[in-house]
Length: 422
Ligand code: GLU
Image 1 (cartoon, protein in one colour):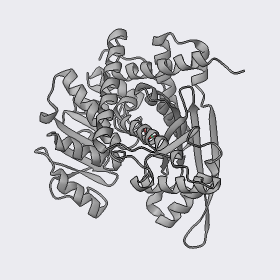
Image 2: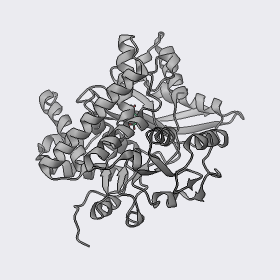
Image 3: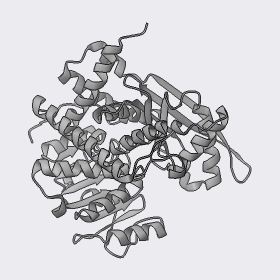
Image 4: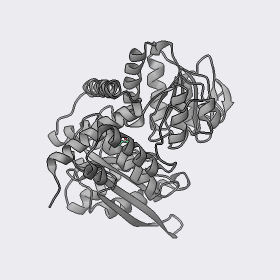
């Protein structure tokens, strides 16, 4: 088979992102000094998080907050609780946040945080104590105009509420703007919970118009049924798409005629998984990725589409609702197979976009309706898609490189204008 792609870095998330940066830098003929600066996170904080467990034992977890860049504004990015969290991953994801915010044109730099833990094995009280201690450890570098955390894998509005409260207690007054993705009663934004999925939907809608297919006639398979995957299933379904398969960590279900999504959502809320749902045939997570469909939406963790399974994918399009779900080698194969990949920093930017809306609404103490939020989100996502397509057309590059060039170019412009201190 003819090789149509160039090396994009190694398999570890950080190598992968640095590889993407190098490709974008090469195409943009980026100033060497700016490229050098962007290779390094500006600040990395590693903290020990001692937690009193329910049985009286003390457990010490490791937490990270990495701030990659604040060239375009305060740092922004989620916090995840997961056993696979490590510094390499969090640094890579912080870098992706920098370019993601730039692609959608919101005034932030990028950050990411995480705690190495398995929340499925912890009680809600243990998770609360861990969250609060982690929040107070990173409080020295976060704040509404410094770095604003948000939900990510295994964190949710409740966790954001605890972070807001912990930070507020330490300064003696309520600081709503220190996190986004908060519950509505604590200054959250309408539409934030489903914003990542809705943004993915708007981008997919635009992609369908661009390639000339009708989304209402398309079949969709979704990997992951957490906050992003379950809302994506509902929103795509509501707009007429046929969801043929979904999966979560425990397994999946497949029905080529289309799954009954409202019933499946109810089932998964009751059982804590989609596995065992009677409206389809049981499949594994691996099989999900190889399901025949028009649009495959990975909405779980990184490194899912690899050189091992990419040759067997039967989708025409991959829309990356997860961060970094495709390895560089997997990406090369998809490219050779002419499978269009809408990259993470575009496809899942709806979450951080509505986080930005939440922050703006909070600072003004003036809140918008859900319709206003969704309409503004649609405009930003559609514009970002069109901006990426313009870069692709001008430079004859694939969509991942186009998005990266757009993001890196915008960050580089800000960096050049600011200059180097001292
Ligand atoms: N964790 C989400 C992401 O990866 C959202 C980040 C945010 O809202 O700041 O984009």
